Length: 81
Image (cartoon, rainbow, N blue to C red; front, side):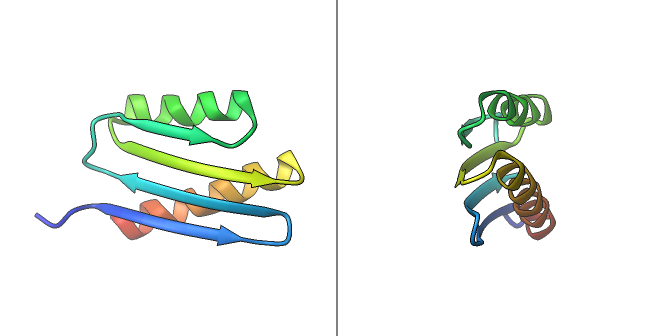
């Protein structure tokens, strides 16, 4: 079976995002967005979904960080699958 992994980066005027996902992982996560509650929710997603997730994000506005992480995470899952 092929590895179901992906790494996606997204850079805009407001944000810089990197997402790595391994669908067949073991619930490992390294998440840093600068938004503690959001980090916790993404960690729970990896834990309960039993996949590995590594996210590094920073930006000038929390709204744009959350939005661009969601876009990048969706693209990573799409590519991995």
